[in-house]
Length: 422
Image 1 (tube, helix red, strand yellow):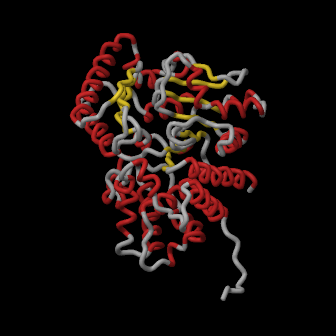
Image 2 (cartoon, rainbow, N blue to C red):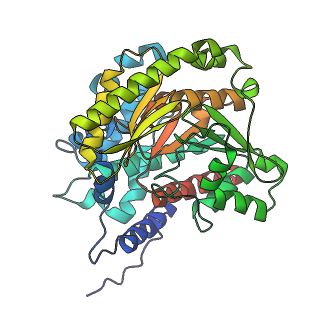
Image 3 (cartoon, rainbow, N blue to C red):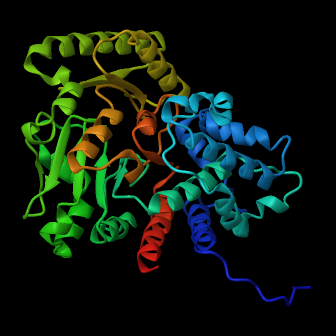
């Protein structure tokens, strides 16, 4: 018999989450209840569950604590750490237990986030099935959105797997088009920070963002709003903006990279006198990738660029072999003088000169923002993902799909608007 008790109004987070799960069930053609576990993601990105020490720490707490107790205790420990000088945070309780936690810029309202999430998932009412990795990831993300909304001035996004599906482009029906424009219109800068790098070829960047740029033109964004959008390509090596024709064009390196002595020092490798060092490094990386691919019996194509080299399997392979290649490259190149990022892209393995930490730091300096004012959204924060390096530069949201990105940006936009109204 159905209860006749009045149903209390759901929070916006619970409403959005219900829509998110419905979309995932529909897109995966499931004939059963949808799960908040990362099962669909795991098929695409390997052992996601095993690669975040903070989330794993919280999951382990559930063995000895009730769900709400574990989140409340973690929230308190994070606040205690943030109350200490930066130089002494490593001695705090949370950092002693999770040494690889990374830098945290805000207190995280985990109990509030749990209460919102609980409306949809009833986590605290479950007796036998404790919250899984994905559910904890969602709760941390909700808490981070609430924490960042007050100060955020710059939101940056990875591209593949975050704004659109892997290997796809920005289509005109992408849900994130409206969300990006909404953020820009309320004064938030938006940037796409991607590994894709096409030196001297802005059209190739445009092709990947065609639907977004067409929307900018269709809505005739003002110059003021338009200037709140940038693309950082090649991890950190190319910066583009939107011109008055709604086309992408490169910003001269003298303006964004070489004008500031501190920033210029990050790009020492890009100076003409160091070109030979970069070429030698890429030769070494290419030799390892091709030799290791042969060892693993992978038939690959090699792609060499100005600041990157990668291998792309010609035939299907398993994710674990790509992990082997990327981890092996990290170890092989660990003594390199040139800053780099070796990562598993899901369908390929690349070694890039530079990394997203340099890119985010440079972009923040160029726009005049700091880490607590910046939020990076990405899908590859695993040990072999190229988003992981930004953890110490700014706050992060770890998403598993473009649908999740849309979900969290809806929350962020609503939080920002509500704070301004109040």
